[in-house]
Length: 260
Image (cartoon, rainbow, N blue to C red; front, top):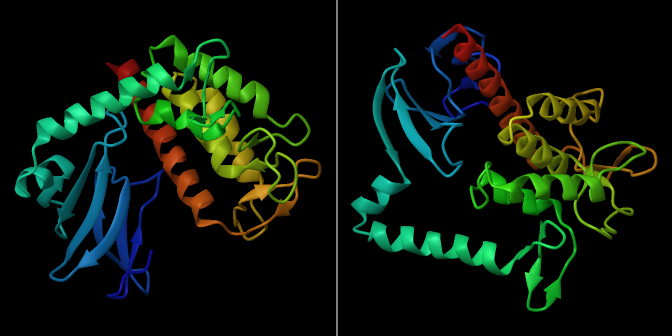
């Protein structure tokens, strides 16, 4: 990512993060994993977001680094709330109530999926409900998480070209076309449930949809697999990087456990 200062930020999911000038000369190297690099700052400082895969995806730290890769400052949403004088207990209680209400009123135990809405009642199976696992609404050890993944994949998976549709009856540029983000949501759900091999299969399917110039589309045709609608779609690219990054860290964690 080029910064306003003529610095190129390299946030790779396979390597450490680093920065170069426009001639390719290394100006900064960080020996640990940064989930997202954001921008260079005056005085040789860099901003990045660090997210721990083992924690809820809402746990993120905004960290400032110097040229030596040392952390100079960092903060997160909780600290910002404290600085603004917000009542943290109030927000935590609201979060708890929302989670309980979601599980009580939106979970359809008969079908093993979440309702899209209850007023009006909408039973359409939707790939975005997989985010309930990503966001921690449904714990990975909860049997509902497994049922949700199975039902969504069974109903929305395209048996001709692969990939996951957004929702039942989707008519946008075709009927139930596979979307890159939907497929990657499924990949991350499998990863959280401890199935990295299936996650990798879905990552590789997504990668194969890229154009010769490595641009990912929004969706592919349900019959031909050809790009349709928008290419490139930044959302597809950002989700791809996010899931591959998490997959890599998951595999690295397993490798470290084996060495221990």
